[in-house]
Image (tube, one colour):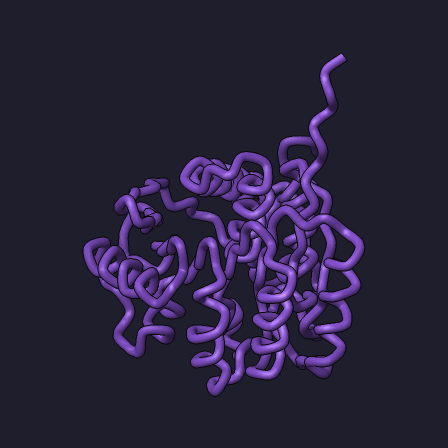
Length: 270
């Protein structure tokens, strides 16, 4: 009898969304939907719903370290997804733990601003994120304003600029960069995957629906779940984008809140 393939274990290091649409709640849903077991390290508690973020509480970096060591000391982690980190102390705690435990894949979602325009990363932490975490990443997944903030430049206004900025970010140490084109003023929502071998365009129609809360969290988590199973970054990114598109399209089945609603992570089942 052939050996049963082990289900991958994927860790999210991120903030909690009390409304359930983003953060670790979205991450764990995406992991489960795509066939991975999810573990979590909570870097911040947010008082949040579909209308916005009303309060943030960040734990001491030492407690983040304790969570990280507890997970890595016991559980085989096949991939890590990093989201909201809140401040420079937590960024450094996460970077130090990754250097100690050396997970095979790290997907870094550079979360800085919420959909409701609430700051989720202290300004002084941007340099720490860029200098200490980005070089440890298998893949970095910035949207256009986040890429501009990391590079200290203007947001890309077209796809050529997206590729140039992605190459500049990869030059800072990340193995690959996925530049997300959702902020482009176009009928499409293209992403560009920048690797050492070159740039790959991941096209996609823009879904004209308002339920986009947690889309960045969901995409990066989907990539982490998939790369843990295949080690093929391009295929994982393309499949994750298709999964997210389906989750947005199916979001009309949900009736959650009165603001920007979440996507439907389990659209393939219910």
